[in-house]
Length: 261
Image 1 (cartoon, rainbow, N blue to C red):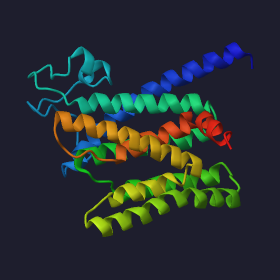
Image 2 (cartoon, rainbow, N blue to C red; image 1 turned 60 degrees about the horizontal axis):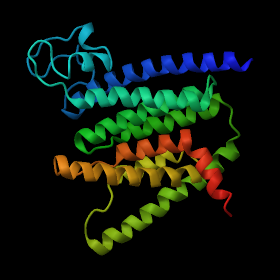
Image 3 (cartoon, rainbow, N blue to C red; image 1 turned 135 degrees about the horizontal axis):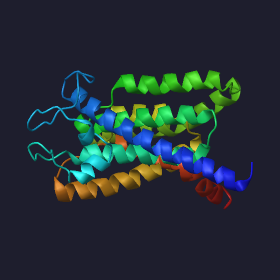
């Protein structure tokens, strides 16, 4: 395929992936916010939290509705949570990055589902500091299904997973020691389980890089949270963002680092 055609195909792929990711982000933000509040996640059409009016198509266009309505309900003027816009942008950004990383290949399907599940994990953790086991099980099931669909060599895959699991296992041991010494929780159990779920997809080097990126992003998020609301910041969204960064952009960093030895 000529280089020009390849660029055009990639551009179109990323365009539609961005649209799909934004739509998914909007849907997940609504469903997860209901779920966290103890309501049925898929219980009817979207409504304004302020006036209760049913929202129409012009109110629900991902990203653009929030911008054109200036973050407010067009009926009552109530503020639309910035989390709605954040989820839409996060979904679009994640899907575009994965499209650039994998292109139009079968494995792209696995990673898009992975990103969608991580977005759901992040939104739920941000909403009420909870990472449901059901979402982690869905991550594991997605990996198992695509392992068969893509016909990956089972021995190689299990070896890679075992090495990757050494990273969260070592972190778990460190956390248990620190909690014993300090007599307080150092890291949530959901975060540790999420790391083990990520180890099903990432190799050990990507796990280390993703964990480092998550820590840096978490420190930045904690600093901003202290200034704005003085509340604790969940770590799940940063683990998800770090893992995505490691998968999409970590190759050159890992190659540079390993080349030093």
